Image: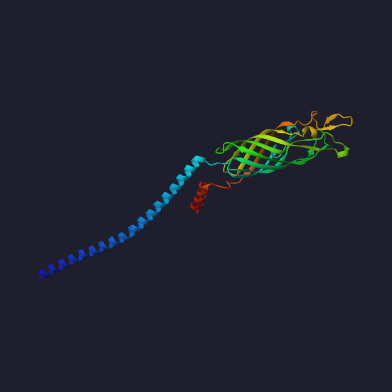
Length: 273
């Protein structure tokens, strides 16, 4: 009886070891299945992270070279007053008001055009005398410096309406209205412009005009052959003078972005999703 009991205990011990070995084998098999899946996911994550870091480094390198050229391929819609929108006049006391557009190329040269108005009004010295209003225009070429800074200095040359004044005569024959005298000519300006990747645009300009037809339009010949000024200034309208202007505008984003900018925009859209 004792031998049978000892034999039974031995068989139980052997069965227990066999069960443990089976559990260990099952766990090993499960671990072998799970481990490759986890390693695969980790490898994918590492690959994505590595690609992201490579993109970042490529963009940072490109941007470090160009530091975001604020001027390149920008279209700007503008409104303003003064010499570029589009005319200055009345010995500096008057301004035209207008609107225009400018496209700055990737070489930082900008083509622009403007159209505007000289408002009608009342003579400051005589309430019963009115001042005629009119329109003016200008087309020109700008060249900007310091494209990587927020403030850009520039130079401009343009042609169009450069100066205006009013005829001094006003009587019953013209309804007590002083007629507008507009001069066409060339204008040269120095520009101070604020423009970044944001939409707002601000520009100040100072320069001088040259109007070759100033003498012809500002003097008249009397019946006895004398030349008299048509304007208050007895010497007529100067053919050269200093002009000023201020312009604000809406700047569109870069129209033809390079690979760096395209990649940056695509990455922003992808991660925003």
